[in-house]
Image (cartoon, helix red, strand yellow):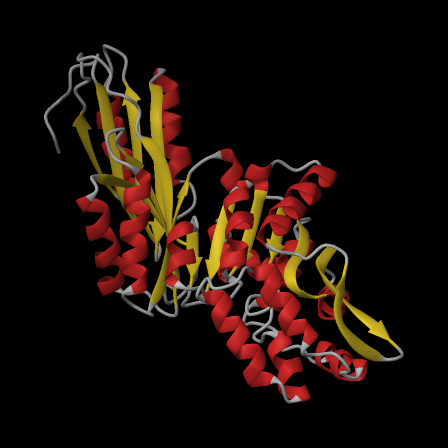
Length: 400
């Protein structure tokens, strides 16, 4: 036990021991009886072991600490107190607060150490650690304070580099604001994001033009032609393809891991959902109906007499169009852009991700991962739910 404090100084009272009902009620009752001022409180229970901290200012004449010690002994817990000297120096600038979310198959001391070490290198102070999963830790949320002289972007890049160096876990950094916990719209790319395939590649293989389409795709990726021209040339190679082939593929789209869970939970929590894709409307509309997604925007393939003409109808859904559609949906729903999550895997998703409050690169190339707010590579699409701060218990309640 520490030395008796000056009655004017705040006192940090720390209680530890086996948790049971009534501990907090008994101790705060003693404080209330003598008129102690409660300045701060934090309580956590880990595997049945309680840690309760109370920062209080005591009356000038009070034997309350002795009463607290006797009560703690009767309750079977330990109690210690420590005077806290208040600083009289000018207040330092308030730190910015952020949340680091770790998600992996199994997170151990090695993974937690790697992240904590990066945080220490950037002078980020860990204020609270929560386990979002139950049993073996697979999702951990770390609340940090970052001093004003530190750049959150540098910390984000450092954490991203750490995640890219391993396939064991993903790690995301988000500013802790009201909008982190009040997202209302989730917008997703389709090919290689919501589904595991590229529909145009499947069509090309079925029609025997797979190699030609792949060569055009590669030229576009190398920057030798823009997206619109590459799409026109690839679609032209599909001229004459029986529409039944397209509809068969659309009816059997392989969903990405975690996609069904993500959409089901979002719907039950009242989120609006949308597909904004440079793919094709037959597939996007099939997914919209299958998963109960609210909006679907994509390229429309022209059909005549049951065959593809090799042309598209209407404006091409390119990078700029994707960003415009995201804004249009948000405006129609009365949702702020800060409340929007955008998920994609390709370069034509970049503007969409930048426009959203949270842009997520999903199993993407390094360039997009570095430009996005955060990335997911180790887990499935349902990892997004942990970025919203949901715990596994809450997810189970929603799914039940």
